[in-house]
Length: 346
Image 1 (cartoon, rainbow, N blue to C red):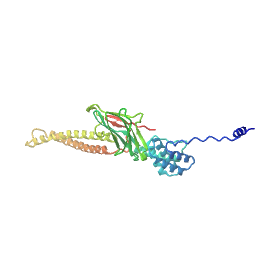
Image 2: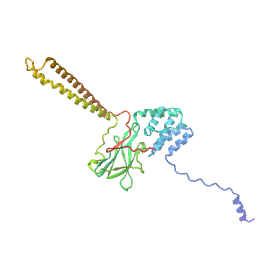
Image 3: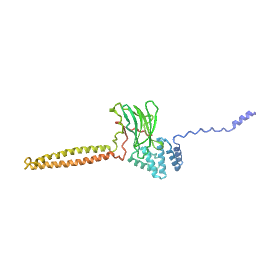
Image 4: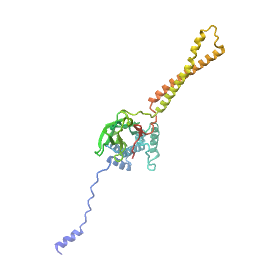
């Protein structure tokens, strides 16, 4: 056999090396969250808790990731009998998504107990609400786009990332802090499309108004009688303010009716003065005069009562106007006379 033949036989008999594994794909999403979920599968709660803490500090987590991190942090704390921590994590979770549900087939009653307690507590304070506020505009020009954090029971909101687009221009990004529950960015155009992200710690995405695919569109009014908003914030008639208006209105009615009865009571004074000039009084019988005096006194008592009620109702209306309700009002925000509440949840 020739050397060439021997070489061919040797190569055929040699074992074939397995193919090299494909290169690892870059990690998707939050790698610390993926690590935490793997550690949970191995029942390493302490290691998973550390990984979740790292995951929560990862910059620019999206909303879905934040909700998952808070859920797992709450479940781990409940599993380790850390009730206070579990309650805190679940309250943060439910403040962002009041309709969030735990998987009952994979969680225990002990893990679900603090979740239910957190849900009950937030029912009184309300969840985080991120809404469109009245834009500042004048005829032919949207000057400023404004959003507001209507309620934030756990003080989670930090900033707002605006995305603005005028006509066919590219989207323009602007990040501004939330100050006294509001954030705004200049527009300076007859019409503007925008969407906004409410950001929390590490610029994590808490909530959205609109999306890139379905933005909020604002158009400037055509004339002074069609302004989309005034130069300042719109009048807020939420909470107890309708009751304040009702109390104030009733107070005004009571004062007006009281004034009528007061005038009726005072109308007898000239007659009494005239009688006092007569010696003896011959223009009226004593029984009729006494009846008129009694009616005047009764009118005076009614007038005093109504004036007192007007004062009480006015004070109650003033207090109700400035007192915040314990439970947050329903969603909605105004753009001029139109109530707008655009929220996107995942």
